[in-house]
Each structure stands twice: as C-alpha cells, then as structure tokens.
Amino acid sequence: MKRMVWVFWGFLATLSGLWLLADTLWPAQAGYFAFRIVWVQYSGVLVMGMMSLAMVLAVRPVWLEPQLRGLDKMYRLHKWLGVGALVAGTVHWLWAQGTKWAVGWGWLTRPARRGQPPESSGIEAVLRDWRHTAEDVGEWAFYAAVVLIALALIKRFPYRLFAKTHHLLAVAYLVLVFHTVVLLQFDYWSQPIGWAMALLTAAGTVSALRVLLGRVGAGRTVGGAIEALQHYPALGVLETTLRVDAGWHGHRAGQFAFVTSSRAEGAHPYTIASAWHPQDPRITFVTKALGDHTAELPQTLRVGQRVTVEGPYGCFTFDGPQTRQIWIGAGIGITPFIARMKQLAREGGGPHDIDLIHTTVVEDAVALGKMRADAQAAGIRLHVLVDARDGLLSGERLRQMVPGWRDASVWFCGPAGFGRALRADLQAQGLRASAFHQELFEMR
Image (cartoon, rainbow, N blue to C red):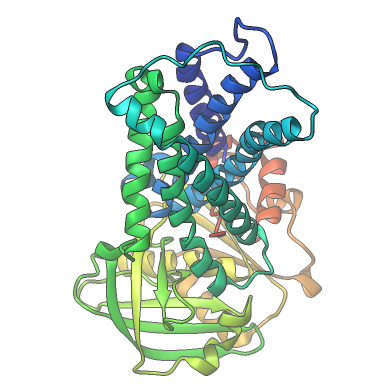
C-alpha cells in the first residue's frame, strides 16, 4: 500500500511541478480575478490528470501489474484517483461557476476590459471560438461525473448496476477532454505541462474508447463450460470447476479472474482455487455468498453452462527470497492458498517451510477434510482456528504459534481491517514491512 500512496502523491506532485514551470499560484497582478484564472487552470490540470490515469487503469493494463503490485492495488489507486478528481473537480467548479454566481448576485464586480483582446490565428482562434460550448458541456459532464463517482462509492448500490453506470464515466471523460483541449491556456501546450497533458488525455481517450467498445480484457478472455458444482451450505460457499477453451495461457496460484455467467450481471472477480496444468485445462473457483449475485449462484449455475473467463490478474503469487512463509487465510480468503497447496503437491513440495493458519466462523467437516488432505500432500503445517471454539487470531497469538516468524514472509488474504491489524502488530515487533503481503480484493 505504501507504493500506492507514493504513486498517488508523486503523480500529483509531478503534475504540480510541471504546471509551476509554466505558471504561478500567485499572479503578479493583484485581485480576485487574476487569482481565479490561475487556480482554475491549476485545478483543471489536476482533475484531468487524475481522471486520465484512472481511465488508463480502468482497462486493466497487465504491463503495469509488476510495477504496481497487482490489479487489486491498481484498482485501489483507481479509486483514490476518482475521489481525488471529485474533490479537485469540485474546487475547479466552484472557482469557475461560483464566481459567475457571485457576479450575478452583486457580490463581485467583474473588472472592465482594457481594449480588445489580442488577435489570434490558426488553432488558437479556432479554440477561442469553441470556448462557450466547451464551458457549457464541461459543466454538465462534471455533474454527470459527480453522480457516477458517488454511485461507485456507495457500497449498497448493486454491483450489476455499478458495472453498467460506471462505464458511462468514459463518456463524461471524453466530453471533459474536449473541455480541456479548448480551455487549457494555449501557451501551456508548448511547455512540459502541455506535453504531459497531451500524453495523458491521449492515453485516457484511447482507454475510454476501449471501455465503450467493450474491449477491456478482450485479448485475455476465453470461453469455458461448467463441469462440476459443489455447494457447502453451512459455509455459504460454492466450488465451481470449469473446463476452459483453447486460448487460456495459464495462471499462477494466487491470481484471480473475472467470470461472466450472466450478461445481465456482468463480470465478477474471483480468486482461482486451482493450479494450472496445460494437459488438464480446468479452473476451480470458490465463491462465498457475500451479496445477491453470489448468494444466488448455487441456484442459477448448472453443469454444462457456458461462461467467459478473463485473466489472469494479480501478483499475490508467493514470490520472495524467504523460504520460510506464513499464510493466513481468513474465511473465503483461504482460496489462493488452496491453489498454491495444489501446485506444491503436484510439484512434489519444495524448499519452502510453510505454516498455514485458517480462521473460520463455521466448521465444515467436508471442506476442512479437503484442506487437510491438500496441506498434507503439499507438506504444509495447517492450523485451523474456529472462532467460537478456539478464539480469535491476533498478532501475539500468531507469534506464539509460529516460531521464526521474524524471518518469514507473511501472506494474508481476508478482511482488510483484520490484515491491517496483523500487519501493524507484526511490524511493531520487528517484521520487515516488505515481508507482509496482503491482497486487497475489492474492485470498487
């Protein structure tokens, strides 16, 4: 997460630095209106910079995953950029629209024009002719973006509706690109800030068009058919095994994919719970009833049903220099560890020394029996903690359970707050920050 924080603030600092090479936040000419001009330009640069980068991340660029530590982290950055654009956009709107209101109400007096504006020609003249149109459509695009971003942040808004409405942000973004091209101060385009904005808006435009044309992940999508379904009612969990068509290039244990079983519902992300073998092209997903869609899967899915699978994504792949590893799978967070155990068992184990701690509210004999068999086959020490029977896992308890924890890498998948608490505790007791790995499996 620290990397995402650095990327977010570093991006804003870079944009600000480039802008300050071209302008100043404290104009030489005194007065409110001179001050307003530079702040409208600066806030506009920040808004479009953040929206452009967020749009690029929305198309799930695999080449960025190694640098940003996985698509789950990239989506967290995407969310921060959306919120940042909303805040900066509100400031931009207040400077622009609020001033007009204040003049209309008599609170401010617009300064008198001093002669005719300088003559312009070529592209600058064309852009000047479009100013009023750009202002009007930009204002309405801002209102649309505010509504769409707010809906994305409201967890109670159904996922299937979120997925559909969120695509409309691409339309609002394209309108705002037009707004930016016309209204950005013309002399910026010949300076580094203009070059940066040209690059960002061009990349954002291509990404927005891919979103609107339904091409996100198109090159990484294959069809498949459901071969087996096993429901664990006590756990609220469904195990689904698919046979994928030719074109799936394989995955690593710990990665996830987007699965579409219903066009109306759209794609949902699920962690893969199986190792990959090209001679046996099957993928298993373990899904928990956490919402309306996942709760209905045991009734809506059937053997033989066709689905599409897009991926794989993610960098929660157990890489690192430490041979000593501690895995913590809380509830449905056990899924990536199941895949890794199956992989290790097929490879005949390896040099790793691994403890797996699985915490669960409900004890299911069949599911735990499968997990114990996988752990034994992979040569992994399994610790099962049932909350009501064994109590809750804490950092202190983990340190007592697992000797040599300071020299281990810790891999956590489960509720985000639980992971943060364990991370803070272990790092306070000497674990290196780089040794704690947490999947942020939250796509909105």
